[in-house]
Amino acid sequence: MDNTRPTREHQQAQTYLNLANVIFVAMDAAGDVTLVNRKACEMLGYSEDQIIGKNWFDTCLPEENIAEIKGVFQKIVLGDNFNHIAYRRYEGISCLG
Image (cartoon, rainbow, N blue to C red; front, side):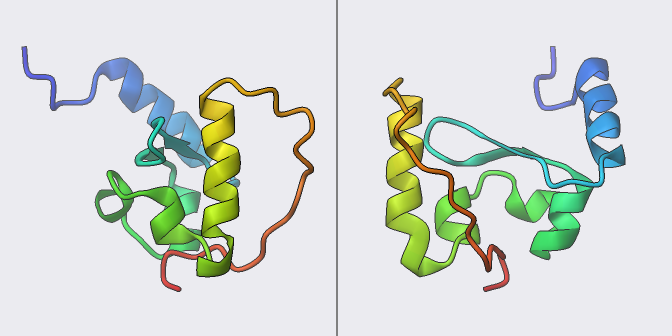
């Protein structure tokens, strides 16, 4: 069986994600992008092929925010209680810099 071809379910999910007028990005535990929708590609200035597999933090965040946001992400991935983490809005997220 060829594991490189998207399954029917994956294709259907991607269709639904592409209909959403919001950015959707899925990452693995290392922060590498595993899935993006069309709106994310439009906003970030990358095609799907260009962003899949890249590290979200290193590629798409302003340099001054990378360490802090990566730290929070790692705590969440490790199962740390993140109730104490304050919500913040970060401006300037763009893969084009």
